[in-house]
Every structure is written in structure tokens, then in C-alpha cells.
Length: 245
Ligand code: 6PG
Image 1 (spheres, rainbow, N blue to C red):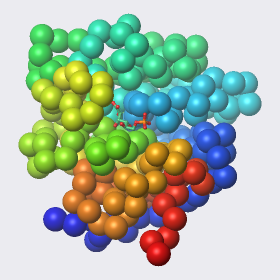
Image 2: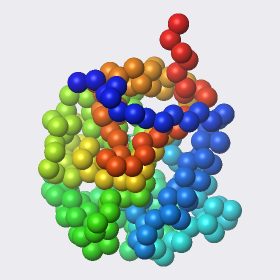
Image 3: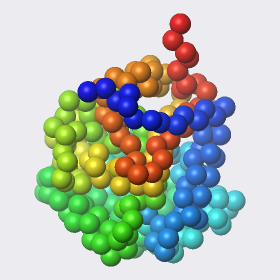
């Protein structure tokens, strides 16, 4: 199935520094126009790290109502919280542990198996939605990246998780790309429950996969979109695919 039907906005900024600042500004704006309990779903990987570190600097830190905002993760590696591969651990080190109350940080908890961890996280998401987001999308902003194979979160090409329509979180036994560890991932229907979905991509090694996604190839990143909100791709110039000849 192609993904050409999904309308998507693409913003190209000059470089990685501009990408971090522009993404931070969109996060601040979504928090500002949210309701009583802003909810942000972070992504892992390397691209967002610079943006996360920016949020901890005085200029940005002072613009976020930390006591109100709740932070989630779109996927994580099935490793201990203090493992360098842990996505929420990266976000904690970059800004959350310095800025956010511990009770507002919702990491995927360790469990016996990825499926068990997924069940626990799904319960936590559903409880949060019922208690604090009734009548509106689960998230105000979902951040996502795109991997070299077109995966997003930990939804890999041709994976059974891609067609999951009822569960919000699934265990992923095998990762297509490094790190080759099991994962836990939000599903497309869960990621779609957001006022804004913001993909971030930087560097010329993203050009090819972005060209394939934007051409409508059947890839997970091309199928992710905000159900009722805005789906936006923010790229630095190096990542922007040059027009096909
Ligand atoms: C993960 C991420 C993953 C990431 C992409 C892009 O657990 O690895 O959630 O989906 O966003 O692989 O990663 P980079 O930002 O490092 O290119």
C-alpha cells in the first residue's frame, strides 16, 4: 500500500542547530496551546538529542511549565533504564532529570519480556488518557525519526506490529537495524492520537530514505500520521532530498 495519500507538510531549515531550535519552538508552542495537562511523546535515536539539550538551557527551560507537562516515549530498546541504549535514559540525561518532576516522566518500565513491558506501558497510557486527556488526543506532540530502512519508532518494514489496530503498545522481538536488541513500541494507531506529529531528520544520510518515503513507498514512516492533527516533517538542508532529475 503506498502512502502517497497522506498529506504531509515539509519544512527545511538550514542546519542541525536550526532544526533543534525550530523543533524546540514547536514543542513550546504545543505545550502553550494545550490544556491543563500537556503530554509530549519523545523519540529516541540521535537526531533529537541536540533539541533535548536545548530544552535544558535557560532561554528554553524558562518557557516550559515543567510542573504541568508529562513526558512519554514512542519506543524504547528492551534494555535496563541506565543502559546507554535506553532512549528515555538519553532524554533524562539531556534534560528531563534536570527540568521535569520525576512523576511527570513516564518511561517504559522494565519487565520480564518486551510483551509484558508493552502491556504495562499500554495500561499507563490508557490510565493517563482517561484521567487527564478525556475527549482529546492522548498527546499534544509526537516526535518521530526515520531509520535507514524507513522504520519509525520501532515499527520496522513488514513487521506484524505495523498492522496492529487495537493495542497501543507492542513488544518487538527483532530489530531490523542496530541496535539489534528487542524493543517496545507504540503502534501507529497510538502514535496517531496527537494534535501534532513532528518527524525530525538531519544529515545527508537521510536523503535517500526520505526520497523513498516522500515518493510514496510502502514504508512505516510513510504510514505514520496524526489522526486529526498536523503531520509535519522538519529536515535540515543536508537531509532534504534533491528533486528527482
Ligand atoms: C530508536 C528510535 C528510532 C529513530 C530512528 C532515527 O529507538 O532508534 O526511536 O525510530 O528515531 O532510527 O534515528 P536517528 O535519529 O539516530 O537517525
